[in-house]
View (tube, rainbow, N blue to C red):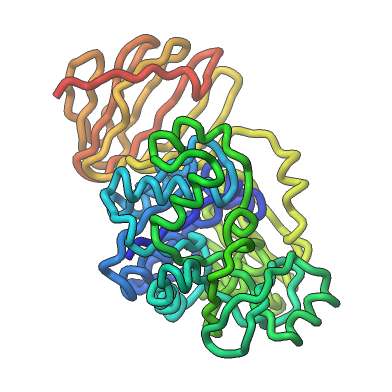
Length: 438
């Protein structure tokens, strides 16, 4: 069984914990089975492993998210990188071709597509696995999950089943309605469309050939930018006649705003935070190494990170996006495949960054044209390579790197480094990579 997780998101609605690189699915805010905090993507992957441990998991995503995925999931998952954003149908088509042409999956193998960030229990993935058993070429080409509505939502599309049975043919799809229309849909037995589909790989690749003229991974990748932006619903689901829906009544939440996210939090406060007894229905998420104290607040979310600080009424937090759009600054925190970094200070001719390298990982061997760097080892052990010369490093060591020098640092244990960049043209684009001779 193949599972394709669609990972998108711009990182606007959960600012300041999310940014252009760190979308909501990578925020570690939920208590995991071992008591440590985990992100949405880690939670979903853990649930998949518990329910269908034999499943092959592929994440369809943009290049900007690859490092965060590798940081949080390691090498456990396959990653299919979209050259650019073209909506869900091209993303699914590319992932299906990747599975067949790169990973060697057979055309007859079933695949289930679902979002990377639903807040669900494990019954959800049991239902997703059951979808595969409904696929019978010539009878049912496409199967999807329909979520039992809990209120007349205007945020979701609706599926109109032919019957009220657990599995039913699909009579029609409906666009996101106004509340009055949603109430009517629910009276007629409609289900929320949660974006979960199952099919055989060969089926979707044939649809891809019909709609784009391409069906191989290489062709799709080379021509991806020219593909029409279109959703899977519009391109495939709404046109398919042999389609069934599986009714799902378990836990399901779309945690797209601070208001909905706090409803799923296990604790009122994450990080250094204090609040007194006069506070009501508040949640605090603090990633800074300074305390937050709240008094007399009601129905409020407080979030603090290196990106900024949010203090908002929970209901009003849903309208944050246009205000975040007005903020123009560099990314202050990001997870990379080798570890993470946090910008501590920015001046006109300098920038100070705290870098954490995971054991056994290191930076690319690279140089900068317009800036010098000074590394101070804070904790851990490893080695530096500067213009080919290796040197072991430990806490207290200081390494000076002049502009033009090729350099890297490799971690033996977890390694924490304070990097000071010095120059008048400090830019993320001022970087040239080299092959490191072993």
